[in-house]
Length: 411
Image 1 (tube, rainbow, N blue to C red):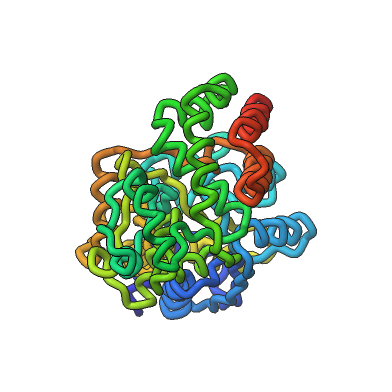
Image 2: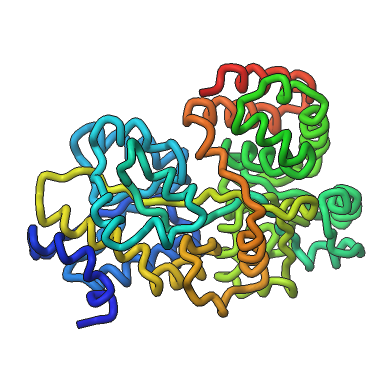
């Protein structure tokens, strides 16, 4: 018996009691970049080698914004997959409320998930009315900027240590024929970059007042005015970044075509696939080098209800496997994310991951926007940011007024 079968004893205790039949389990997700594909392959390998079942990969290209409507449509339309990815937070809330997701509470209690998942807010995001409906698999933070050593060397300037230095160095990067700030054209990228700038420029208290408390007065106030002006100035820095996908923008940094990119720590997977070394080929600055803080976003897997007992047994085995120590290490080292378990060996982590682990250990964390804002509110903000970053005619003042109105009606 393999190590994985041994490690699945808790799940097997009642899963196999239902059925031991081998299952082809379709797993849908939006992990299609080089680093993401390498990471999800660790899940598939562990499932195929550690159980009697078969992982059927259901990757959907285009990111979460493209994949989630497809996933939701299949589940509500009576064609559920075996497991599906959502971000930590409220994205699957209505599906759970409709009774369409498998209750994992017995498995979670048998394996002590409340004792091993850290921070506890991750499991809270999986919980409704005291019942657990998903398994958190990683911690991803948006709060990073990635800087190309090659680009700043070409520009004849030192690698910045914070956002102000990055902005000050941008003209030299541009004069040397490169794009200062790489950014793709997907809505979630511009909204995410704005969120990172908010924490760094307006500060944690102002961010919390707006994103957690939905305080429209703060959103319309002077702290956020600074953020919108900084974002308006940054629009010029991204000119020439004519790519669509986030990983294409990351590749601009990797290849020295751009000075930097505001992007979550999933970008680490792309640097790793490219053979680049943190601290030598690129620099990562948490909180834009201003506030050393990370948000505890990331990914969780839900398991749509299925009438076949054999499928449910396989679902429970996969849920258990995803939180096992070895799989947590193998997956997260490839993904560039932090494990949700604090009791695993991460001596192989690179410098950027170690920075994140240290910040997490110090408790300098924020919830992710997906955990505090509804999908509808998130969508409205993404629409606004898409317009704002693409159209220089939209002033910082106009964008801020529209943003404050969204927050005033946020749920």
